[in-house]
Amino acid sequence: MIALIAAFAKNQVIGNKGYIPWKIKGEQKRFKELTTGNIVIMGRRSYEEIGKPLSNRTTIVVSNTKNFDGENCLTARSLAEAIKLAGNKDIYISGGAKLYEEALLLVEKMYITEIDCDIEGDTYFPPFEKEQFVKEINEKCEGEIPYTYVTYTRI
Ligand SMILES: NC(=O)c1ccc[n+]([C@@H]2O[C@H](COP(=O)([O-])OP(=O)(O)OC[C@H]3O[C@@H](n4cnc5c(N)ncnc54)[C@H](OP(=O)(O)O)[C@@H]3O)[C@@H](O)[C@H]2O)c1
Image (cartoon, rainbow, N blue to C red; front, side):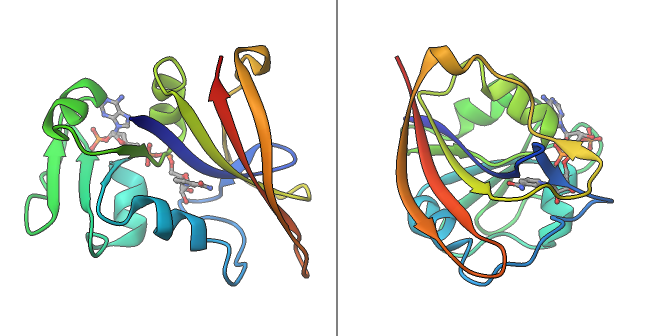
């Protein structure tokens, strides 16, 4: 199974100056639940933001300039190479923008956290053909910044 996992604001913002431009307690719960025991593929800048491999899952970093090989961490030179390295575990492609753009062509599912407001930023989730997916609303979470977990499944 190849999926994409992302959180974006109403204006499609995913990042600002190399960081995720919101802090919402508990918002990453679904990311942890889905990716634990599986494979996370991310771009080099996203990995550098986290700064270390995620526990209890394998991180494959896509980069042509650096190597991040170590425990639970591999480097690939392209998304295709990363998918090959993943073997037959479930794959969650987790950004940033360029990887999402490539991933949109091949993912079966998109696990999206919709942040329910506009947020200032410089990195955006790419536009996609909504009619190619069925959208299911999974959970609405209220709070200072409300958000909704949704799943898009390719038709
Ligand atoms: N809201 C969310 O769900 C979410 C998720 C992830 C990230 N973010 C945010 O997004 C921003 C980072 O995203 P970004 O788009 O700037 O960077 P990124 O995709 O994380 O990293 C870009 C780098 O990854 C490598 N790369 C990416 N795609 C590649 C490909 N197809 N083939 C080969 N190499 C590839 C390249 O590394 P080299 O230059 O080393 O070759 C490229 O410079 C940050 O602000 C982060 O906080 C948000």
